[in-house]
Every structure is written in C-alpha cells, then in structure tokens.
Amino acid sequence: MSFTVAEVSEFERRVTLLLDSSRLEAAQTRAARRLSREIHVNGFRRGKAPRRMVERVVGRERVRNDAIEDLLTDRLPAVWEGTGLTPAVSPVVDGIREVTDGVEVDLFVSLWPTLSTPPVYEGRTVELDVPEAIGEEAVERYLDIYREQFAELETAERPCRAGDYVAIDLRSSYEGRHLEAPSATGFLYELGVEAPIEGLTDHLLGCEAGATVEFEAPLRIAVADLPEGTVIGVRVVVEEVREKLLPDLDDEWASDFTDFDSVSELRERVYEDLEGERLDSLRSQLRGTLLTMLAEEMALDIPEAVVDASAVRLYEDFRARLDEQGSTVEEYLEATGQDIEAVFGRFRDQATAQIQVRALLDSVAAHAGIEVGEEQLLDAYQAIASRTDQSVDSLAEEFAGSALENSVRGDILRTRALDVLMRGVVATDGDGAVIDLRLDPPDVPEIVEAEIE
Figure 1 (cartoon, one colour):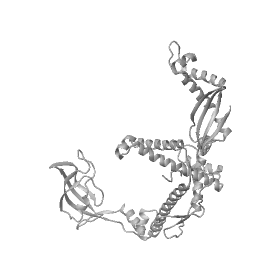
Figure 2 (tube, one colour):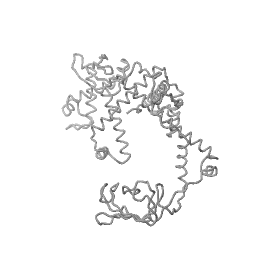
Figure 3 (cartoon, one colour):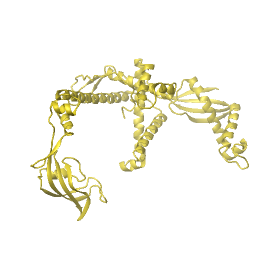
Figure 4 (cartoon, helix red, strand yellow):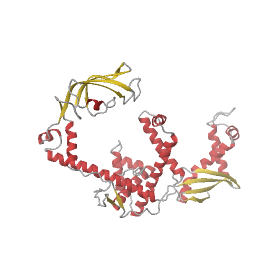
C-alpha cells in the first residue's frame, strides 16, 4: 500500500492513499454481501441478493463508499505506524479520485497540538491575592459555629435581636383573601434566616413577646397561584423570644463533644485546619493564575476539529449531569435565558483552554525529563481500585497496553508537570513578599486540564 503525507498546517496533515483496483473490487463485493443482509431485495432472501441487485437498490456509490471505508479501517493502523502520526480525532475523507490503478483517497488528519519548548517559568514571579492570616478571632468564630450545634434555647424577657429565635403566628393574605401559605401557627423562626416573605427579619427585629406586626412585602418564591414578587399582606404575632445559649468552652465540653481532651488542643487543630484551607486556596489560585498566564504566551494553532471534538465531549458530560438531576438542556436554556449557540461557545472556549493546558504540561514534562514508572502507575491503579470493586492486579491486567493505560499515564505525567511548574515559580503578595505555600509532592494523579476555563 502506498501513501503520501502533506503538511496543511502545523498540526494538520493530508494523507493520500492509493487503494488498488483488485482490493477495491473485492471490498465492494464484501460490502454488497453485507448490505444484502440489511436490506430487502425483491425476489431474493436476505443475504442472497447478488451485488448488481444490491447496487440497484442502494446505489453503486453507497457500495463503493462502504468498501473504501472498510479498506481504510484495515489499512490506517499501518499508515499511522509508518508515518508516526497520532490523530487527535477521526480522520475525515477529504476527496476520492479515480486513477489508473484504482482510487486515491485524501484524508484530512488533525493532530494534538504540541510545544517544542514551554514558556519560561523558572524563577517567574506570580503575584497572588493573599487572604487574611488566620488569627485568634478566626479560630474563635469557628469554635462558636461548632458550639452552636450544641446550643440550647432559653426564653428571653427582652426585645429580640439578630440570632434569636422567635415563636410566631403568621397569617398572610392577598387582596383580602386568606392564604394557606405562607401561614403558620407556633412557628419557630430564626432571625436572619431567609424566609418566603422578603424582609421578615427586618420587621421583627426589636419586637417583644406579645407584639403584633402588620406589613406588606413581596414573596421571595412562588406560592400556589401567586408568582415570585407578588406583594401580600402579612400579620405576625410574636409569642415568645428565645436566645441561644452556647455551652461553656472548657476542657470538659471539649472532652465530651470533640476528639480532644482540652480546649487548647482543639484550638490548635482548628488553627491547623483553617491554615490548611488558606494554603489550599493560595495553591489553587497559583495554579489557575500560572496556567492562564503561560497559556496566554503560547502561540498554538489548534485545529478546529480538535476543539470541536473536545467541546462535544464537554457538552455530553454537561447533558449527562442535567439528566442525573432530572432535567434537560432545553429546560436549562429556558431557565437561564440562553441559546444553545452561546452555551456551546463556552464549551469551545473551555475546550481550547484545556487543550492549551495539556500541551503546556506535556511540554514541561518533556523539558523536565519526567517519566512515569511502573510503581507510580500501580499507585494510580490503587487509587482507582479504592473507588471500585476491582483489585489493583485486575486493573493493571485490564488496562495493559490500552488507551486507558495511556490516559492514566498522561494524568500522572501532567500532575507531576504541574508540580514542577508550581515549584519553579515564586509566589508573592501585593508587597512583593515571598509566600511559602509549603508544597507537598503529588500523591495521586489529578485531572489538570480544566484548571483554566
């Protein structure tokens, strides 16, 4: 089999193959035989109609095209091996010409874009928006929130204030008609919590037990036949004011209701957790900022077919998530007031960003000499096995030499490349002070293509 390769652009090729007459003739006979089993030809049982009759029913062009497709399926693996090309998406037939020895078929091939060298990143300074340092106030706020889970309510002989609970009788009406909802008797309402009636807390603050408050306010949600925003009449009688009493923050409480023996140990762990969240936020910000910064410096001519195929995958994932939630794309579009072109356009932008990140990290991995060893591959299988019913050995056997193994290797490679990137730059705050992000080595591969959107 002979073929030629012509460069269309940096990441696009046109491969021209010659399919000789004898092979094409045999392939057309096989295609006609297969089609005869799928169609009905008068006077013949299924699968028994001769080729000329099949061609009369479906057309000679259909038989010929099916034969060419069959030959390409058989021969393309040898073409990719001979050329070293790895198509990013299925090649597209771009032309078919009759020649003396058979037919020539042009295939338009789109490749994954690559970078010969990554943008300079070693020593680069990346400025971050640094959140407030974790102090005693933050720790105490967290402890108060935790203690609220164990709070008791006690009647208060005073006007109500933010954070209190009030027992109320609520009656609502619209144009003189009593509404079953929102209405309630003996309802315990926490001041500050969003209610179906807009401004309910504001009208109740400062009231004492026995007070009656009447006002008009819009509905925050649709109720019965009344749409959101409908102004209704509201009458509220405050029966009782109750305040939250938090348990004493002492060693006895810490020992009884936490995993720690003392308040000092609990405070230390809370500080460590909050500081860990703060560092995670900074690391995430560094990843996004750095990848966006470097991607903007890359000049990648990404084939349209590669972007479109990636965008379609993102769209299908989006549709599947909506389906799991019992919704559809059409319902989403109606609820958000968008059209499908705008939504798919965002998926194309996201796909472009992901492809750029992939090319960047692959380039960094090559530049840093990163390789994936069998031990790292088995560690990744262990992480997968922990979420499934399969063992590490069965996963390794199933994935061996497959596209799935290549995908896992790619995830490991790019995770390690991202780690190299983050360690190679200097993170600073707005004043130029260096931030110690205390980066740990990556344990398991992560999906990093969606870091920028």
